[in-house]
Length: 375
Image (tube, rainbow, N blue to C red; front, side, top):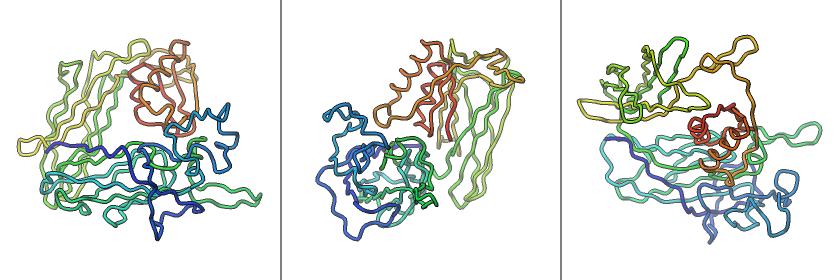
């Protein structure tokens, strides 16, 4: 079987929990609101005192609330903790397949329950979470219950009397936001699948290196063939030979290949050309997984105080800004921002204070702008 994604975005049941902070235990009694919550979003858009972050609610007049995009009840902003619920089914379950639950972002810390089982706890508000839920999924076409409780980071009282968060808050959005703020989806894969792949290009060495990580979730050993093709538009650029990989039962293994590449089309600010790497995993002659990655052929290095891109000295001129939540949570926003920067003669953007959604990096590759990413 090939990989399949099932989106869980949309309306979820929601219960705000008032007066509770830094607790991931489900309340003894759960009563969901009549109004549903949207995933992805943050249920808070002002602090309980009515001030977003520490300096007003960014409203110029009472009826202007640019961060209240979903028109949630103002009372919800008084809750530091909230409970989500959604049900779903998995059709046509195949024997041996692996089923993962994926969250691209949950604020601030959280615990995830599936069919009354705790399947994960998470305190990385800006990083993705991938959970193997295969053993917790109910039989085909039976309803599965997913519950997520989101709350604040743990805090400590300092000698000065101020309270300090023990989690990585980042900017004002990380301070204020609560809830499932990025996409949620189910990923179905074969029992042996591609975990990740890394592409490195070198202008100085005229080479390309690819590292592919494969996991075998079966008890018995597996032999797979990895086929890697680089596509220039619709044409295949011949660079890699098929690679054989043997994995022991329940193991992860990586393979790294480097090949010469004499005349690639270079990525640049003026011409941000992108290739596509297509990685296909075969077992017993059948395709069992596939991963496609867009990439630009480029290399960045420094020489003393000089910044070099593809052998050409570059003077960096950039922009930086806070993440503004759902107002700018689309790839189109990122692309337009980067295009405006380029029109003003800028060539890099620093994504301030916190990791941004992955499509910000994709947009930068496509528009032709460098990124200084935050941790």
